[in-house]
Amino acid sequence: MKIYNTLTRQKEEFTPIEEGKLRMYVCGPTVYNLIHIGNARPMIVFDTFRRYMEYQGYEVNYVSNFTDVDDKIIKKAQEEGVDAGEISARYIKECKKDMEGMNVRPATVHPLATQEIDGMIDMISQLIEKGYAYAAADGTVYYRTGKFADYGKLSHKNLEDLQAGHRDIQVTGELKEDPFDFVLWKPKKEGEPAWESPWGEGRPGWHIECSVMSKKYLGETIDIHAGGEDLIFPHHENEIAQSEAASGKEFARYWMHNGFLNIDNRKMSKSLGNFFTVRDIAQTYDLQVLRFFMLSAHYRSPLNFSEDLMEAAKNGLERIRTAAETLTRLMQAGTDAAMSVQEEALYAKAEEFRKKFEDAMEDDCNTADAVSAVFELVKFINTNSSAQNARAYLQKLYDLLQTLCGILGIRIGQEEEILDAEIEKLIQERQEARKQKDFARADQIRDELAQKGILLKDTREGVTWKRA
Ligand code: AMP
Ligand code: ZN
Image (tube, rainbow, N blue to C red; front, side, top):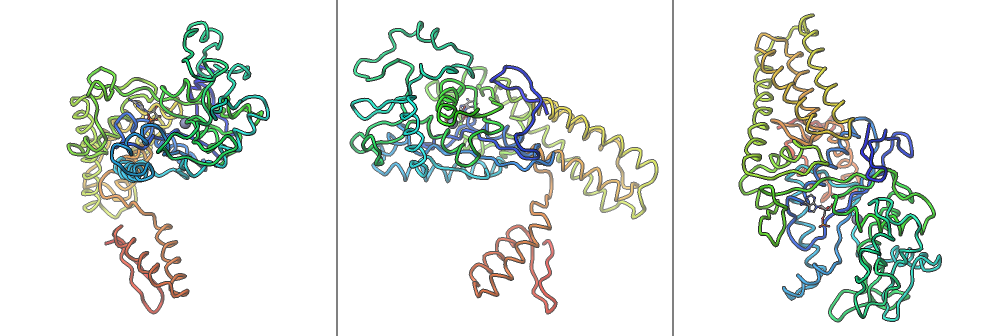
């Protein structure tokens, strides 16, 4: 797998720290509003990357935070006259609904900044001890940027050039030693959420969150850190400065950044009013269309959102689904015979599209080319399947199409979203719960399975199940 590493500005062969394992951190949204389709881009592209790595056999530990303490959240809470916690809890819930609609799988862990304050205080204390941070008289703790020799290595900026360009950046009244020093801890303001700390009551700065959560859930050095390209500077640069100064080790080996989503060729922004939430889109389109649209471009390219392109994505997705439906229909009529030599040969041809798909994904997660490979497979299916074929052959074509679409997170047709092994596991858990007389849990599992179309039958021989 080749990955374009922002740190080295080139495509590099990916080698994990530990064989077969991938430790990945993706910066998540600040939860003060419904997420917009720009926020959805990193969610979709890195979820696809994760799915591909799992398909390749990696055990992926995928961590993505919710920033649940921030000026914008506090402002919104004040406007509504409620607690900041109420705002963030509300929008985390809404964000998870959107993620589900876009078929973005939940991360292994979704840490919340407000639950990790102790870790942040520890790291800030460590930075102060090592001389990389200082507390100002008003209780603000700043990072001493000039002390970190590698500052600028990710964004390829030179601190001295930056300083020369911003000689007048120092805001009067700020107690920074240097304009590029950034906040690790801010003192409490009236009416704001605050935590006790050695520097008085206050709350953490944004950058320290990700350094701490990444370390806690993935370790001091991780394989991949990712997010939108707007985060390269200063957010990710500052994360490196904090983490590497604290641990003395490399923070992340590969840095992946998605390009921006524009609307009608203009930068999408709230102030311009050319701004859509994922929820807006869901009124007109199945969110699978939004996902398919996002994957039709390379993740590092800027992507223009327009109705025309969404319509094209919708039609493309329809074409794939029609092929899947056709196969399902043909399978019902297909013969029971084993695959003929001819069918074996044809299927071998179809496998070439898998190879094309994989080659595209191996080349820095080129989903645009991977989608083209899926379209080629669809065309192949349309010309090489009929009711005269063996069911086994049609099934293999269907499975191949489903596998490739599954990596893209695209659902086709009547999918068995729950695997047999998972069903068996839940049934066992239910039996265990009944043994423990935890009938509430047992019923809950039965309902959960029923919702997924799995019907249980208790027999004298044990529990049997079937798909509804
Ligand atoms: P934020 O809530 O602004 O911190 O953003 C959460 C994630 O969405 C970050 O990875 C951002 O880089 C990303 N993001 C925000 N706006 C866009 C956009 N218009 N296009 C692509 N990614 C974006
Ligand atoms: Zn972050």
